[in-house]
Length: 287
Ligand SMILES: O=C(O)CCC(=O)C(=O)O
Image 1 (tube, rainbow, N blue to C red):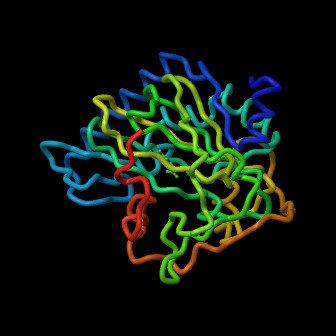
Image 2: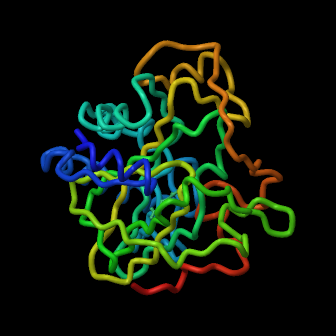
């Protein structure tokens, strides 16, 4: 569990790290399964519903950048989504009733793994209240050199920045008011988890080190947080419940919201969406 000081850090800074949450055996299993998907990605010649590929991906030198829906792709990832220790920590921050609203495995391989430009997750999926967070499970040690996440402490209590360019959503902050100078590296050893608030501004540099950086991300939300862009069918929506019972009563709070529409020409993953950004800030950044 988190200590009171860690919960306080989450409330004030918008993120926190908990060490030694996922056992070495579970990390080994997740790495092994991930290696199998990298092998399978050799067959892919373009992005698919499962694979997002780095530029330069080939059958001989696979460059799998993201597994798009790990939970639906293998039981090992589903087990991790329901990891008891993680759920206890998440519940201590956003309540007992939980759903999940997305999952992905971002991989930055040694020497080239892509940056993720500054953004707020909330800009992609505004809800009726902001009890939403993302858990990142470190499959590898996360260091400044291999492209760990960068967080802007306290930005989850500020505005939702403009993520549009030429009137189109580009999945990255384009707002001239945004100042990332106070950003911090979220370093952690493998088996740790990070938790970040859906409104915090964050991103990550490329991996120019000799070591891989694989981060398994699960998005959890309070059961009564309702997606403003639509919940889909009642059955599909309730299939995302992890703890608690379906509710017809969303909790509506006073939260800043921007709608991520109209969609850009290229969609499919944050990487693809952000390729349309004219002035990337992190693409060539070094620690
Ligand atoms: O993998 C990363 O470094 C950042 C992940 C992230 O913020 C995202 O995929 O939305």
